[in-house]
Image 1 (tube, rainbow, N blue to C red):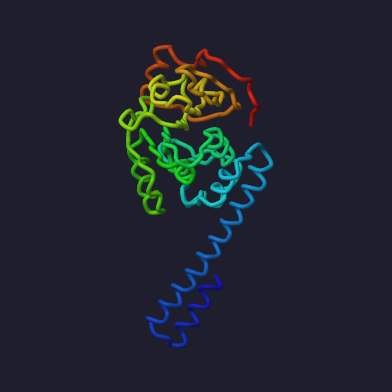
Image 2: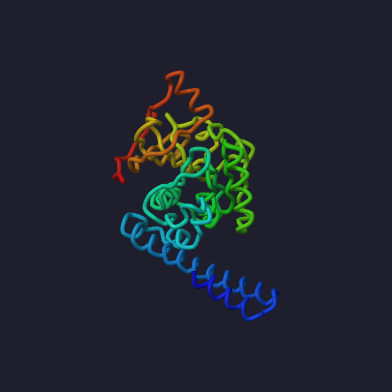
Amino acid sequence: MEQNGIMKRVMERGIGRPLAMIAILGFGLCFARQDENWFARKRRDMVELQLKTRDIKDKKVLEVMGTVPRHLFVDPAVQTDAYEDYPLPIAEGQTISQPYIVALMTQCLELKGQEKVLEVGTGSGYQAAVLARLAGNVYSIEIHAGLAAQAAALLRRLGFANVEIRRGDGYFGWPEQAPFDAIIVTCAAGKIPEPLFEELKEGGRLVIPVGETDGVQTLIRLRKINGQKRIEEITAVRFVPMTGENQKIKRLGEGDSLEAGERSPRRGSY
């Protein structure tokens, strides 16, 4: 209201239209800067109150979570909630995971900076942006064409040049780019997709929610050791289901099981 009142007085005093337009642009930039400062404070609060107080200890993960502009990856109507401790809806009935789960899954990948990473389930592109700051190259698959195109355009605009996105069924991975040092799956599978395990390097890590795709799942970290699955249960989670081939397998009654393998005990839940 105050901005509108100022502009009305500017026009009443006979200042020319060019000067008025410059003034409008100036006010717009001022308010945009104020918004960015507000979002920056929300990001800092998110890191301090949601991540550091839990079990996120990787300093690089904390740094990246504090810099990637999460609010740009959600609908403008919910941007003010972007840094809160809960997931948010995006298009195609999908969601963007709460910040803690993004940080936890990223930390579980144990990235050092030069890895080739596969992401299954691009969604908004936020997880890919986080990965891009921590790995060498990120390959992300999204089954919904609209989401894939939107995320690719946004990541290009924000300067994430080391991310490649394609539309496809993530159950089958990205064999042309395999093997991968790490694979992250941001949707729930009834069982560990065998193609993803095959595309994992020896010693690589696969982080994926596994279990009942219409209920609570178990987030696991799988390591490929001597060609075998070594599974660590991380926490209880709730993700949207993986579609495509995973749904076909579920209909055939082959899903919803955590495969046998050497396991470590569960760490906790959220």
